[in-house]
Length: 147
Image: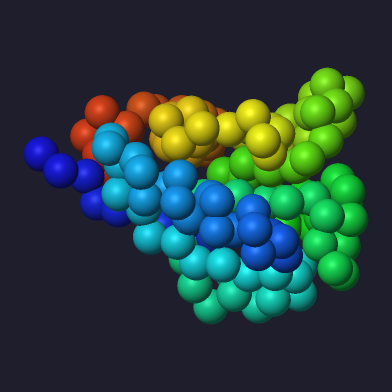
């Protein structure tokens, strides 16, 4: 049985990082992904108001928002959507704080490979499902509706 594609919203203003992540997602042999992309917090919030996604890949350094405030603003409005923080900062304290504030994972750019990224996405969706519904669903290929 094939699963439906996972709708990803990538929020990052660095074209080089965006291209690399697109390539990683295309390389996945276990999942199919549909990728949308936004560069600013403002664009992201407008997008999320009109569209759905299964997971958000979020850079913390955007032109109009920086640091954990970026995560907080999105999480406060869209807490049912799993958020994976992507950053160039390999900082354990920042990672733990991001998780405390609602992120499902914290990945350091430059330390990610295609297989690891796909697994993090799938596990983040499942963790969020368990938090919000209290029941597993990934084994059926079911992806929650995060509207």
